[in-house]
Image (cartoon, rainbow over all chains, first blue to last red; front, side, top):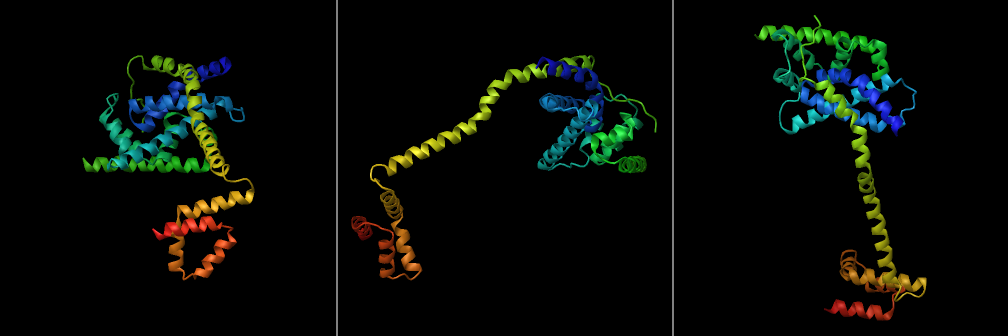
Length: 171
Length: 124
């Protein structure tokens, strides 16, 4: 058990900050990211005895984090629907209300445009653009082919541009 | 599109985060024992229900049942006594004759005493 704890602690040291930024960009607020990160690391601790080393630890940790994040966002959508509020703009609204945002108005618009992407497309975009993972790494984590990821990233970029031009027009 | 991190965190957040996350194993190990018992609770409940069922079944069958046939007679009797109206209803809706019913009762090995008892109940 002590050995597992040591491995877990080294995972925390190595990945917690990096995963925080990924999760924060995915969910849109610091509080939600903090809650979700606890859940992710709890999952990592629970699953650690079953880690067989077939995948790289790096890929395994990221896979848990990305799956948990998508599950969390799905649950958020259901909660929003039950409250009869719009689930489409949920993360963008959180970005808008985020007190820990210190960028310009234009940067907030970019963040909101990213937040409006469909969840999986947003995930690919954030992993590539912000987390600076290679397509091969993203492919190993998500199980999606490199070609599909490139297409997804390209479409995401186009959608962000379109979102930004729409918000310019509406001003 | 330029890349600049425009989101921040509260002061000292990451140091605090690391400490909180590293407490997960201890926290989980402490709560593992009561949770283990809680996980077993449904199985214990199922086992208890099964024991109760067997005990009741044995209690019902044992006093009057010396052989297997007698046991089944008793069960048939119980079924009929618990729902004598069902028999009457069947008679009315499916146009069964009294002979049909008598044949059925004879085939089911019901005793004369039990039939008499049922007739008495029907009379009320």
